[in-house]
Length: 334
Image (cartoon, rainbow, N blue to C red; front, side, top):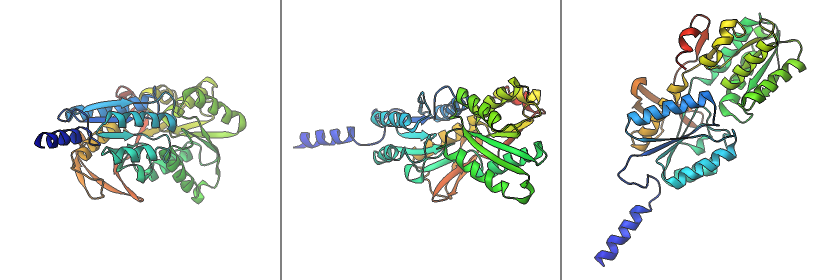
């Protein structure tokens, strides 16, 4: 009887949901980005890996070939089978991942989102780059200054389901409701799906469809770089203004040439790094995702969880302005 009982307990322990299969080994922390080959995503995953390795864990970096929810779901299911301890996801769709992520949480896996959120039923907490309202409004304010407050403008976004992009665009539209923008008109929101070739094609289509276009706002690193190339190749410097969110290393040539006077971003390394520390705090039970909780985030210092509509989030900081005065320094960083 004693032997049977001991064997039963051993089997129960070895098949318990959640946690890694090695028991006393390193905890496994996985991050799933939108798609492979994205420089912004590579930096974000690098930051996540740096944090996890500082904390003595094992980092698993995943990204599908195409930026689709279906491809991410396949990866998530594989991670569940591997019995990782945490899954951090940059979502291609806010709702489509819910069944898989709920399955993960039911197995004892901690789930958080970063950059582009999943809905609050699909995660414990979200890592936000900056205040979405400020991100959206500041890009309209920049374009207003660049075009002298008059003319047609367009937005070149990532995917139509990207939660972060859509929220920023909502705030752009709210900013445009201010009477001071009465002579500015948003004529189109185009989607390049965070694919360079498609973003180039969408930029060219905007220029063809709207010959009086005065400015393009691209709140995506792939999109703004693609738009910068098109405007450069077509000799439209000064005729069509460009701003948005870009990587300094990719946008330096366009800022230095004047095709893009200035743009914004945060450090994607820091977004991933913060997600890594939050993932560890969740796995260790130091936080549960409730507003008001605080934890140490390595070199970023102490961070606090705050309310986010019907969920909670952790804010990295304000968007940073890159222009001709500082781009030479920052292009060497990321």
